[in-house]
Length: 179
Image (cartoon, rainbow, N blue to C red; front, side, top):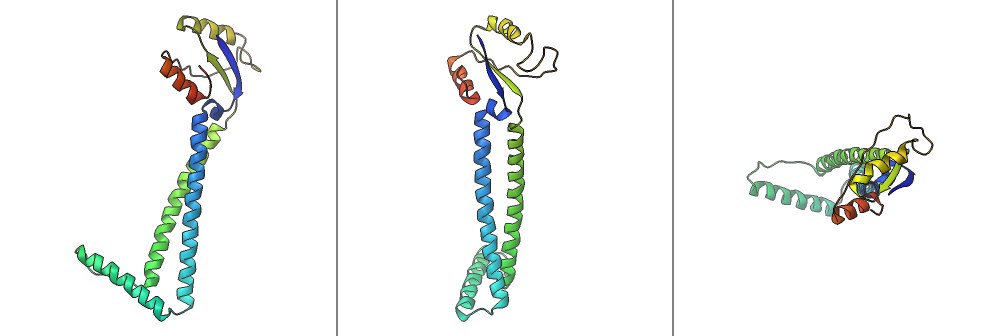
């Protein structure tokens, strides 16, 4: 039996994809916000270091950090490099800026997928019965066109056929319908 499910968006036809897209956007937005916050904190620290001469305590902390970095470099057999805390901070900010740019590109791509999933105009049908009856029932259902359309309208579509109980259940879950 063919059942008309209504006109839906692409995402409504694939609710699992719509949910995954929404979760990916939320996750990436969280990562972008955290990275922006970190960059802002580092920029503030950089401004304070530039405008206010470091105190003895902060100078000692910087020396300890540089000593730890140099000790690690020597242990790895790398040549010792000297850099001021401001240079190290600027390098870190630059690296985080590159990471932020990459995250924003991913976010734009995932949002683009959301636009695709939001495209409306898909007539959805479900079929339950024997394979031998599927073609005839589908033909009878569409002989006059889709609701709001005509039989002469150009169309494109995909038919998924699942013949085992496990495959029918999985397809039904993926498409958000009962098969």
